[in-house]
Image 1: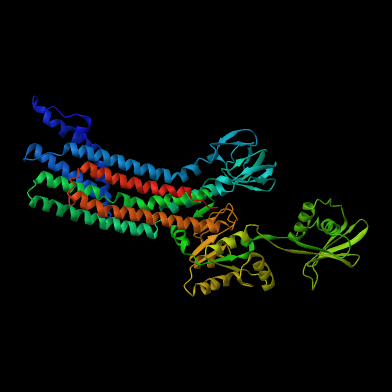
Image 2 (image 1 turned 90 degrees about the vertical axis):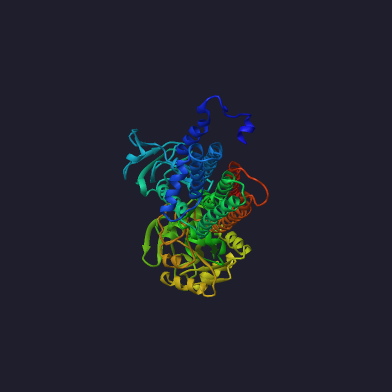
Length: 597
């Protein structure tokens, strides 16, 4: 057929060596290119999992040996031209498959490229990043990449962390702030003290998790492997039946053998073997680029079936630190009350004191200096402001921070754990998806009830000790519900391990949380919604690919055997098999277009 397309045929007669031209070139192609499939077949047989490579090898070895025999020993038509075309098309299809897989797994290469090759030390010397040691001081100029995890010791700037967290907004960095290797400095120079190097950096941890997730096997992969094994057995049996049937029909050994080879080739479970791994690789890399680190493939696969999401309150639905909720002056204005409270608290290191000072600065107040500052253990602080003595602190029967002037109450400031701005949107989105949202906390029932009401959460567990959170997970699972537990991965470890899916949030640069199946780099609860959407989209692509790969073979095997009255050349069978593989690969690539928002 190819000869006819190209209007070419080998010389006939004249020279005795002409009949050996197909033998020479066919043999070269068989041993040079065909050996790839034969080696693969040997590996499959050794592992007792015959599949694609076994079928291809069986087909090309049969065609080669028969052609060799017809050239020297028996009467018949050799297949060297068909064999050469077949191997060429198979190699092309294999190359297309590897190209697709390589593209899907490009996340690891992208992550590796984030690190700069060199780092500039404080003294101006440049060294390879691999030579950095703990405690080294490095200078990161505007536009430069941060070479290692560290702490800012000098300078102010903004850093683009989108390649690690998926968040496009620049993050401000000043003295004491933590920076991550591979992120990009923006507009100011920073001096950074190296705190983590090599395999201990956040980037190395992310790369490790991505690699583990792409290598892990899902339930769908096990199903696909089993189907590929059975398809291989069906193809071998079908090939044998085809050979015997056409021989008995009297069409001759050459015709019968060509039908058999075509059946073996067209039934190769190439597409079936690629259906799930390619989707897995794409979904894992897509997750990593959006700040979702999948440690366990089964966790992502199971997320589509989640019935309940159990959120730990502190640090997950809230920021984990106090903020000013209400300002209640008894005398004067809110600004007057905050000015006095901030002035007295300015010298205190207590978290509540810092919250009051921060709110005063947000209000644009100029905080005055104080005299005779004194901390009263367990009660609060006092100081003299503008010649008057003030006390700021918590007292009995008080719901907030009391401010007194010479012993008289002048106002009260209510502080509470600040709810994350994204938390309410997360709860609403989960409800719209038909998922029940529950909150768990060690705080009092009143605090829990107030937070739950603000977020629209109907059910919550309050005053639960960390070691008892696992009991609440079991309680939610009693009716058969699939529960996802979202916590910080430290004191929530037993509950995260017990839940159907454990999700660690607020990991920051720590990616070594063993109790979670999925880690969220950002402290954004909206990423839970992203996980579920990605899980559903991933499963949908897997099902589509498996249906296509299986349905293709239901039609392809009878067609190759000649049951429909169509005599399909072996090379066209190989082409159709390759096309089915490419269809699966292209369908998987559409997963990249998933919109999380």
